[in-house]
Each structure stands twice: as C-alpha cells, then as structure tokens.
Image (cartoon, rainbow, N blue to C red; front, side, top):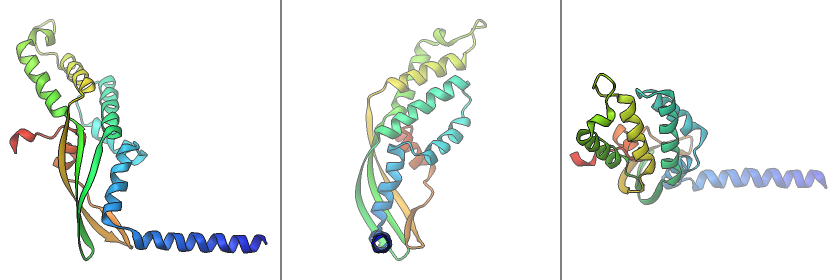
Length: 183
C-alpha cells in the first residue's frame, strides 16, 4: 500500500510540475517577481544591502533607509495590464503604486534652502548628516503615493519566463525616487 501511495505521490508531483511549466506565462513571472518585493524576499534584501551601501550615509542612516525601502516594497501595489509574447521574448506592462519618496526628497531640499541654519555645523557649513536625518525622516513619514507604468522585458529559458535586468529608471520607480519632473 505504501508503494502505491508513493507512486501516486510521484506521479502527482511529476504531473503537477509539468503542468506548472506548461502554464508558466510572462504575466505569472512578473507577478512572482513583484511578489518578491512585497514579501521582502532574501534575494531582494541582498540587493537592497548592496544598493544602500552606495550611499554616503552613516551606518544608522543606512539602516533607516533600508527600513524605509522595506516598507516601500511591502506596500507596493501592482496591476498587471498587458502581455505580448514574441517567440522566446515577451513584454509585460504593469502599473505600480509606491510611496512618492521623490516628492519627499524635493520637499526636504526646499525646506533646507529656507531653513539652512537648522542643518549647519559649528562652522556654519552644511552638515550633510543632519540634513540626511531630516530627509530620511520625511521619507519615512510620507503617505503620498504615485503610480508608474513599467514595461518588463522577459526571456524564455528552459521553459521558464525570466524577468530581464530592470533599467535604472524602472528600479527608481520601484524605490519611489524616480524624477518624474523631467518627463
């Protein structure tokens, strides 16, 4: 009896896996990709660590920025809108909604210009660290959101649709820091 159950289990797994491969679509791959952001997947968090290291922040500010972006990822909303397949390549268009950190940064810059004394050191020079603390606090407290359209490019490899590397502007959209004023 155990052998029969094992055979049925193996058949189910084999049949189920092959169905999953046949049913794989570019839309599903983009959905899985964006869900990794929503779930703060370890691969995404590893990339986040590398990304934040590029900033001239204190260790504490880097930790704060990571927490801000983790919240951004968790709260990211998306709507898959279109899929076009051309052989082993495809595009999927999605609308995402994220916190508008670009606006928060711009407002912080304007505030600094009007209140520069708050961000100076004892030599009356700009204290970048004070300003970064202020800017990060503004980002942390923002509830304004913005919608962006992203076109994901995918390539089919081994019967699986893989999302290609995102452009810098698309990553900025996911992070909510995209400069939309220059469009």
